[in-house]
Length: 254
Ligand code: BJW
Image (cartoon, rainbow, N blue to C red):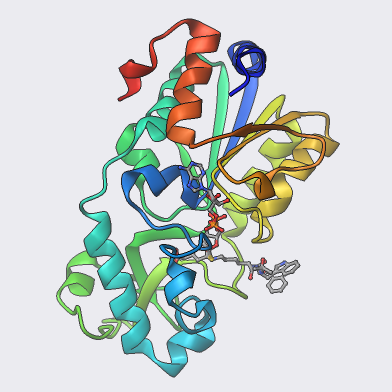
């Protein structure tokens, strides 16, 4: 990694009045959580997204979809935040204004101590009913690992409270994300392939409004034209940026 570039971005971070961060599955990869599109180990390398992450797929085979999410929750219960999550939580205290936008549904930013997390694609730990979005109590959801239980209020099937393909993102979260992106001075894009809309447009929106944009990802395909690209895993790069900006040893975030 180019040390001058790390120093430069570390200073940008240190001086940022309003930092906006957009995270994707890659920030949780070092916590052992599979990404969606990486070859071999990702979810979509093994499963068809239309079958598992769409309303049509759920209606076709609710048991299959429900069990996939039960398995993912089971695996996530073992996952712990990594240095990347911890750096972002630390920044919330260190800078005047930080807006954390995540596409992740895993709750690891909250587990790391980030005080306010704007979840664009929902949260896997919550369930709601398919027809009316009635909240489903976590105990009712956990008591039925093989098939979705029925909603006590309307009888429709329970589903995870996440955003599937073809569904609208929560309007309040998306409005906030658009607003923050246009106000950002510095915008970090961490661990996302940038293939899923509308989240993928936020960095461009920020750039159009005058923000400096920095992408952190091991895969150069994730680079954005006009943005600074830092190649590497976020659990390594983010602590190095704190070292460059504040002189804090990266081991503090281990
Ligand atoms: C590391 C790392 C390390 C590895 N450190 N990095 C405009 C044009 C075309 C299509 C559309 C459009 N507008 C809307 C659409 C349709 C659709 C869409 O975008 N489709 C595209 C795929 C073509 N969007 C939607 O349907 C959205 N709804 C919507 O827009 O409503 C209005 C509308 C509907 C229909 C038409 C038009 C308008 C909803 C999107 C919902 C996405 N849902 C999912 C599932 C969530 C629930 C669950 O978890 O099960 O969200 S799909 C999946 O993708 C998940 C993720 O949040 C999302 C993004 O993935 P992410 O995070 O980028 O992961 P990966 O795997 O792709 O990338 C990981 C990256 O990490 C890689 O780059 C690695 O290199 C990197 N990495 N290790 C740092 N250690």
